[in-house]
Length: 397
Image 1 (cartoon, rainbow, N blue to C red):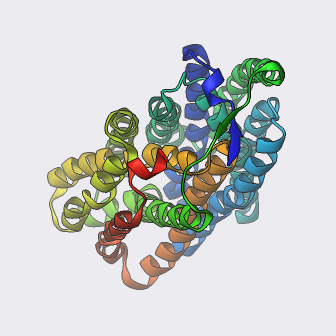
Image 2: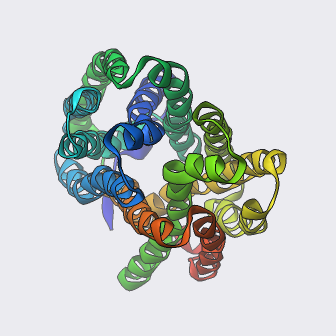
Image 3: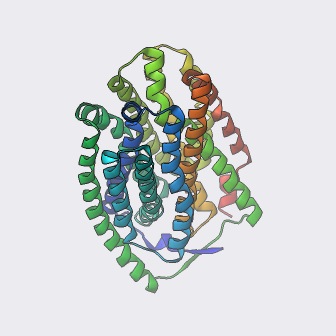
C-alpha cells in the first residue's frame, strides 16, 4: 500500500506534456546522434566493433546504474530543478564528442550523455503522469514519442549535417540542448508549484491487491520483456548501418536514411501503444508487440533491400508499442512509485541495451554482422513470458 496524488490532478495539462515531450526529443536527438556518427568515429579513430559496443555500453550503463537511484530519491523528495541540470550534462557530453581527441574522450562524452538521461527520465516521466489528467497511457506515449522522434531524427541530422561538415559540427546541437534547458526550467517551475500545493491536497491511498512476491515476480517478468525489446533495438541502433553497408553496399548516408525508417516507425508505434493500452489494457499491447513481431524479425536478415526497408518499418512500429504499456503496467503494480518505475525501466532499457550492444559487437567481430542479425531475430520469443503476468482484473483488486 502506498500514497498517490495522481487522482488530484484532474485535467490534462497539455502544455506541460508538449514541453516534456519536446525536451525528450531534444535529449534523445543527442543520444541517437552518438550511434548515428559511429561510422564517422570508426573511420576517424580506427575503431573496432568492440570499441563501438563499449561506447554504447558507457553511455547506456551510466544511465542504467543511476536512473533507479534518482527515481527512488525523487519519489521521496521531488527535485523539479534537476530537469534542466540533466539537460546541461547532455550538452556537455555532446560538446565533448565534437572536440575529443582520443577514444577516452569519446567514452567520457558518452557517459555524460548517459548521466543526463539518468536525471531527465525519472522526473520527466513523473511530470508526464502528473499532467495526464488520468490518461496515463496516452500521456506516457506522448512523452515517449518525443524521445522516439528524437532518436529517429539523429541519423538524418548526422547524414545531412555531420557527415558533410565533419565531427566538429556536432557542437551545433548544443544550441538545442540550451533550448531544452530553458523549457525544462519552466516545466520545473510548474512541477515545483504543484509539489508545494500538494501539501494541502487529500492523500489518496492505493493498493494493487497483489502479494509482495507476486508484484516482484511481475516486475521481473516486465524487465525480461524490456530486455527482449531493447536488446533487439540496440542491435538496430548500433549496427544496422554497418549491416546495410556490408549486405547491400550502401553509402553511409543511404544506410542512415534506412535507419530513420525504423526509428520513425518506432515513434509512431509508441504513440499507438499508449492509445491502445488505455482502451484495451497494457497486457494486450505487450502480447501483440513483443511476440507478434517475431515473424518479421526472422525474415529481416534474408530478404532484399526493398523488403528490408518495409520490414524495418513494420518491426519498428510493432516492437516500440510495448514500452509505454510496460511502464504504465509497472506503475499500476507500484502505485506512488512513479520515479522508481521510470528509473528501473528507462534505466533497465539503457543498461540492457548497452550490455547487448557490447556483446553483439564482440560477436560481430567474431562471426560477422549478418550472423548477429540472424541471432537477434529470435529475441522476441522471450515475449512468451507475458503469459505469467497478472491479469488486468487482478490489478483492480
